[in-house]
Image 1 (cartoon, rainbow, N blue to C red):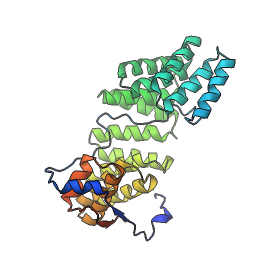
Image 2: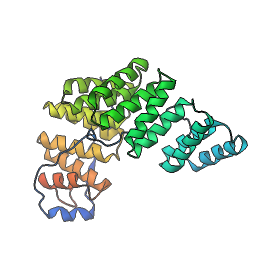
Image 3: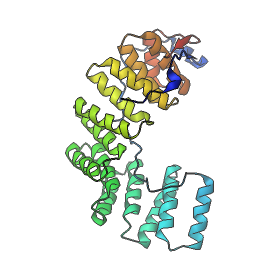
Image 4: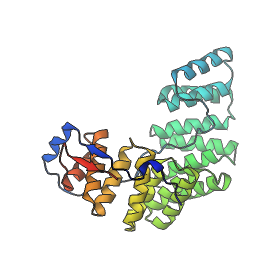
Length: 298
């Protein structure tokens, strides 16, 4: 049973659409499609879970000082590269991982971390090569199986992705990201019951991540279990109140369920996060939303 959040009990929160949404008076035809990113968006994973430093300037400065004192330490470069990656400074991260590997060509973590940067920047073949190298050095490296599985999924190689996700799970059965990504693979193949099982396991292992609730809600919608879908998406927006995808998907689920009040309120919340979000703009118009009006979201 999913953990219930006490702050939602009896909640009657309302939201208002920002002034810019008045432009939504223009009719937008067609029904917006909400997706979970299975078509190719890169999903953040726990691939650098060994890294224990937040991506802050102070920590980067501290790690740089360590490197100055120990310029031949590959672990120091790998750690700073990981922090650069967390901060979105991909070129600097890549330089540090390259340096770590040049100092220690058998450093499996550095290959896996460089694979993550390559994948985030769309260099999928290079990412796969890095994960291959990491696994050649350590055949029980669950993080590398997970990362390579994601690369295979993005490259539309579901059989190879499935094998890698299974291997990652067999090595680390407590890794929520492996179940989540295998669930996305099942979902992309329209095997929604298997997908729901994997998303449920991911949620059981990590309850504060909106992504698994969103993904499971989409699979519930696909099998027309709208009650379960809306419940999951309630959990998603409670876990991450600023998650644009969570609010938009929740709105779509309530629209499907015929609850225009909650649908409009959720589309409005999405538009308050990003005014030009087209799926939310179209949905808000479809359910008769009006700029400046309050809506009950729960």
